[in-house]
Length: 210
Image 1 (cartoon, helix red, strand yellow):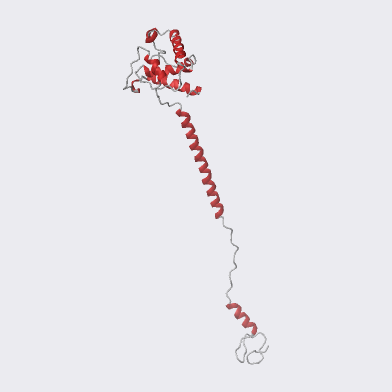
Image 2 (cartoon, helix red, strand yellow):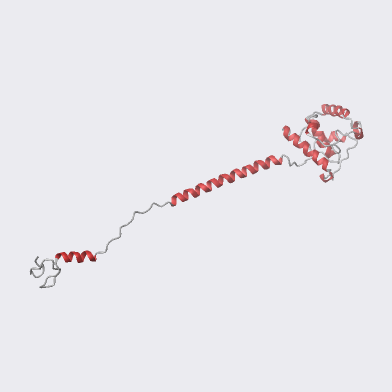
């Protein structure tokens, strides 16, 4: 092997030239390689699963939203159905009566058939003793739509309610017992009368009359 610098022969296996000290070619390569920094092997990146968590989060929010909507709708439906059993007693009948000439005869015939002696006769007779007798659906089944409206409004008339609809005003003003009271207040109702009003309105609602 010949030294690249001075041209002297270098003994085989020598790392340097004995004459000038120049490193042999093989030693120079090794010295260079030893000075080169080895680059770390880059591991393949793992795919991020952030999108999966985001998707699951959005799905969870959507499911919760649907559940809340269903619950709210169910509450509204339940409340609307329940409201039909929590009535506002308006006094004025919702159901219209028959024509005057027909209704007078119908109610008079019914009053004559009712044997409530303690409730008087003729113009002094009550149509139904709603302040003393519990009203049930089976009892109401025996009466027509217009008669049930009279029974309901009679509870108000008994305490002097001033009717706004002419047909009811005419009917009750024909009764000797009726005395209009401009200061009428529902607080005068007994518990039985309140129950009877609620029963009648529930019955009318079930029939689709209101």
